[in-house]
Length: 112
Image (cartoon, rainbow, N blue to C red; front, top):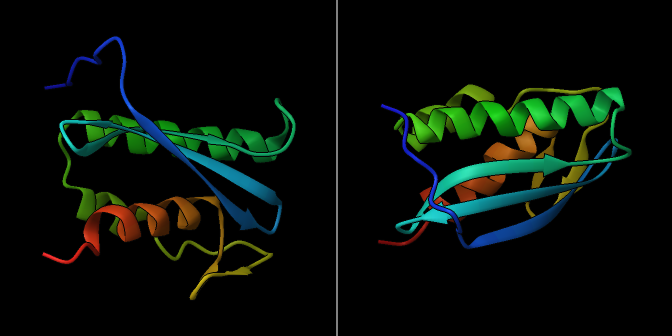
């Protein structure tokens, strides 16, 4: 069952380098868990922006329908593109890969 969105939610925006420029990933949270993801890159309307928007919509849809975050990350992590970029201790291979790695680092790799 799709979760209803509260009127306001706290969010964090992370800038990640990609082969197409800086990708801004905004993650909203509800009850301490990721709830929605918005991705912005380049100029509005470009094909790269469409890929970024699709990635955010896909992840948001999955989160709002209670799919486990681990499964969402597994579906999009390591998807390759044609211009990989080094970031922190990893390689960003594509827009979906960047989103997956940010979600994994922020929510799945936390020390218990």
